[in-house]
Length: 109
Length: 119
Image 1 (cartoon, rainbow over the protein chains, first blue to last red):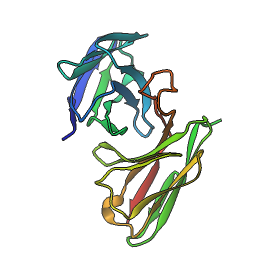
Image 2 (image 1 turned 60 degrees about the vertical axis):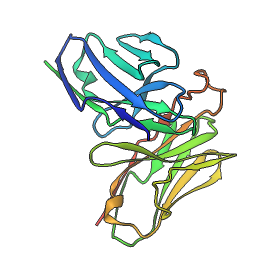
Image 3 (image 1 turned 45 degrees about the vertical axis):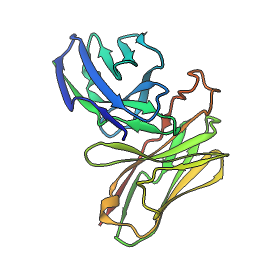
Image 4 (image 1 turned 180 degrees about the vertical axis):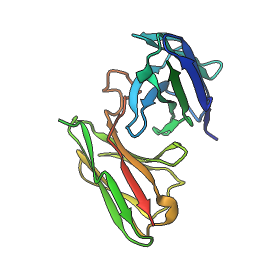
């Protein structure tokens, strides 16, 4: 089967650092991506990892370990506007995308 | 200009009716998708489609059918609507193959969503 697991909720304060983990089990693997979705909005692309290691894009970084079928999204210098749901997603050999259940991040003042 | 647009934004209808949701993208992408997001925010792919291939998620009832008049449009037709069809439906598009800057990945661009309520 295909499945991705993420924590359902994470809470942090402004200025802090938070890590959202994702473990996956899929039939084939092209890479792990992350999407952000604000309430009432559409998912928007944040990052993608095809190879092991850390990819940094501004305040956001994403990490992948293919041998562990594990990745994480790291958000630094948290801002109130970062309050949203974050989804990891895998593209599998069937050329389809499988999304994780999402992690709701609440940033407190 | 909006990259991926959907109409209508809200759709309220009775059980048993047939309805359509339209999607258009002006990004020049050749692959389009339909996703269903339920009340628990689970995002599941229903279809992916390009000029060459339609990939159907086997869990999607055959009451749902995608129709693509051209590569900029992918409409979703739903027959005999049921209560469980109530959800937000997102259209998305991406480049295909390895033409994108991310190689095999292909970043997806989502439309604003259509909230379907079946009464």
